[in-house]
Amino acid sequence: MTDARTLAVYAARAEAYSAIHHGQVAQDRLAAFIARLPKGGAALDLGCGPGWAAAEMAAAGLRVTALDACPEMAAAARARYGIKVEVAGFADLAAEAAFDGIWAHFSLLHAPRAALPAHLAAIARALRPGGVFAVAMKQGQGEARDRIGRLYTYVAPADFRGEVTRAGLTVEAEETEPGTGFDGSPFASLYLLARRAA
Image (cartoon, rainbow, N blue to C red; front, side):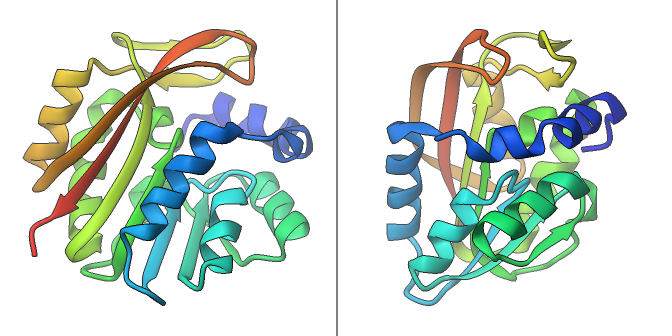
């Protein structure tokens, strides 16, 4: 994520964001994601935000790498959960065959539309054969800012499935769910589980 206004919003609201509960749907998705990974496997929380998912993965015995582009959000995650967080954006992901799972839950949606194919390709390369990718986006068209200034790239399900497939991953499960954003706006989510070929 490189959008300065989006980073500034998270910097200013890191403590408030870290205090909210992300809901049972997110908890269930994360539990199912963890269950698909090998015991003691390597997981990446890409755009970890307040760190709740990385902390859950670590508690489940996974070896977790947590990345976030916002220094203040990374600091909040460290303070709340005691986890190690590297300040880095999506474009900094250069690992190859390093992770059994990559979790990008409502993070990749802050990447510009034009950058999505490159980011998805990097995610596919970073997965080990058979590795699992979990991604949540907001449904819609185009790019826009929300009420508090964050930049979003919205996706149509069929189009985004195609982008994930072109990156070299096979979509295995899909969910849609209504939600309410941090800015109070309703949205429809798209959640995909995909896998790199073994």
